[in-house]
Image 1 (tube, one colour):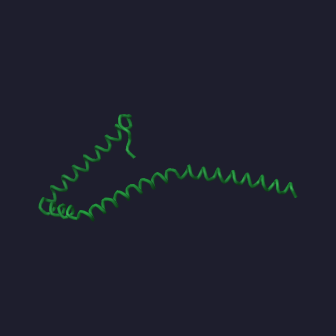
Image 2 (cartoon, helix red, strand yellow):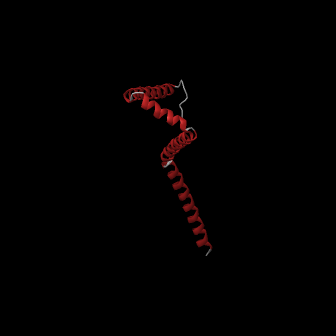
Image 3 (tube, helix red, strand yellow):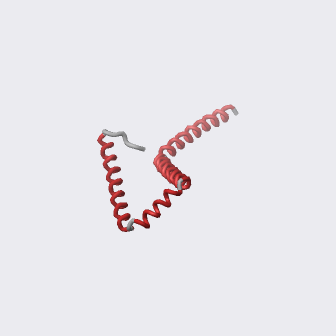
Length: 107
C-alpha cells in the first residue's frame, strides 16, 4: 500500500513538472501574439482618445469641413499626399537612425 502511494506521489510530481514545462513553452510560443495584441490595444486607445477629443472639440471638425468646401478639393488631396509622404519618410528615417544606435527606438 505504501509503495502504491509513493508511486502515485512520484507520478504526480512528474505530471506537475510536465505541466509546468508545457505552460512555459506555451507562454514562449504566444509571446508574438501578445506583442501584436499590445500594439492593437495601443492603436485602439489612440483612436479612442482622438474620438473623445473630437467629441469635446467639434469646432475642429467644422473648421475642417469648411476648409474643404472653401479650398479646392484637388489642392487638399495633393497636400494630403505630400504630408503623408513626408510623414512616412520621417518614420523610415527615424527607424534607420535608431538601427544605427543614434536614437533609442520608440515603442
